[in-house]
Length: 110
Image 1 (spheres, one colour):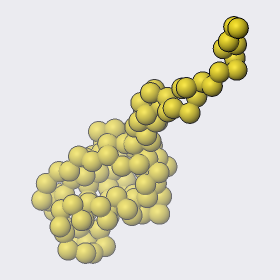
Image 2: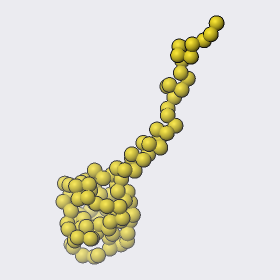
Image 3: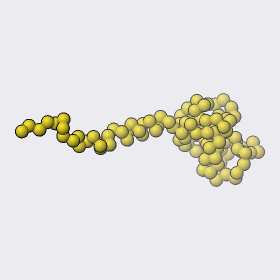
Image 4: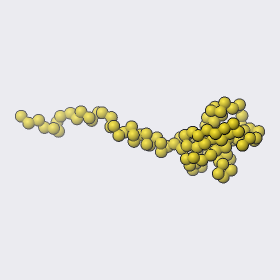
């Protein structure tokens, strides 16, 4: 009796596709932008989600540098534009490698 291959269960059907993690990792990288946060105390290259709000980028930088809480601002070095904390990185078309200056509450440094 000949076995019909179409009726046999596909052993690989429920198995994860080996390419899927690579594809998902690639998609995840497409959603990231690497910037350099510059403060009076140093530089911090870091990858953020492109949809991250500027306010969260500021909060992460304050935490990373163990800075005192305050009304910090983020400035795009290439244009000297102050970034609105309610907007996202992608809304400014921030590119990989861009430098963002973290401006202390008193405006000093940099």
